[in-house]
Image 1 (tube, rainbow, N blue to C red):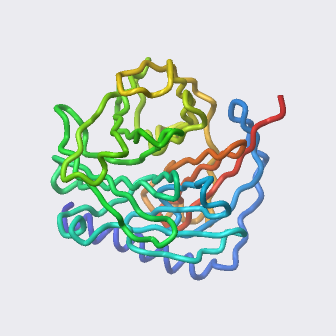
Image 2: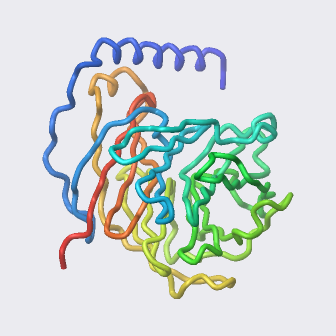
Image 3: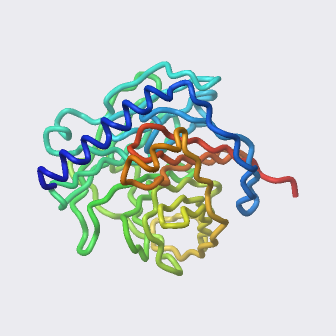
Length: 301
């Protein structure tokens, strides 16, 4: 980034911070109830801070605990949404090697799976495993990019049987990457197989398994869409086909509407989590100062 652009962007963020402080007591106006997204019905919307800006995950083995991710770290919250642990989620070795971005995380069996992105190198990405109980990084692996693969590492999702780690790229994708969870921890991890998409998808920021044959995803296209990807069969170690359904456009809310006129960024779609009959997904305000968490539940049949 050019120095002039960097200084201008810094000044915009600083101005936004000052204005935000002045408006700290402002309460967002209530919007109309958002429409249903396929079978999902809106329940509530909450505003958080930047430590909840990239992803969200829950684990049946850790009831009441929600894991959030931001660019460099993780936040644990308990019942009621109160944070009880925040930490840097990237091992020092990866940080020193230029890994400065964590995407949408997932968890399974008391373990959190972390996608690490390195835009500086542009030749690899990494995946890590963190113990949810202690917050300790247990292991990680570097993935050298396949031919034509983008360096972006926006999200991961663990299959319900815990055997497979699904991940994406960026821009136009014709497939999703799949790795064996058992391989995370080796010095290098290779793509095991792929989920073939029946139509290209772009800017997918998060996916999560609803069942062994269904993923729910959130993209950052202009419409910020919620997607449903139905697999031809459960993941079994070989390429699998799929069919994508667009469920609708996700809501856009601003904690402080003035930010839309100060910052030069748009509201950005982020990660997604599905747990039983509850769907949650994230967006972030311009300037990345506030995050928005939307909770939906399955509509009655």
